[in-house]
Length: 272
Image (cartoon, rainbow, N blue to C red; front, top):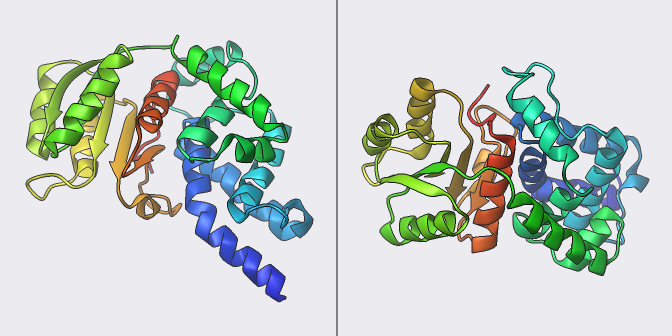
């Protein structure tokens, strides 16, 4: 292996977890998102010219992904879902109402923190066009469902911040759980549409176990995890989330993640 190929391999390894995060949020599915991430790797292995080494490593990887994504024409894979005529079909109907490429630009800019210029390089458009798509995305995503959100977070300041962001978006917070037991109790007390959860909780329990118990009792809901170590839940192995925010987060990241999760009105989070 040449030094150039070795460097490409190292760069891809560093950025692959974040490509998985982006692909999962874009498709609303861990399984479908990871499929596109693997297809990206296979394309680069088959032809390294698809990976533009003149670009920053993360931009080059995401650019290759977008070349595959744009050519596939399959933003949501309904095959094998639990409710092909319901939740996934609703997502398809929502997609048909959106301006082309707006969600991609929004996720790249907010969740993955790419500049307008980098978004443009990834999508093959100018920085100004990328900025326009991001603005349109904010307006269009705002028209979709608002609902009730259960927050699982043991840090009071962070919990208050998340509650404020959700309320400003038009959502209602049904409760704030500091422990797994709190989450189970609050979920049983009042209906909710989405869970926004930290990983480590006050009593030594964790948000993953808490959401598993809640979803087992109340059925599938969108789940967004917030963690200081996102790469640990982006390995492509085991039970991993479709929607994930890194700590420290900013308000736009939270807004974008909530909008995407509500948009799909389902989650592959914690599904095998």
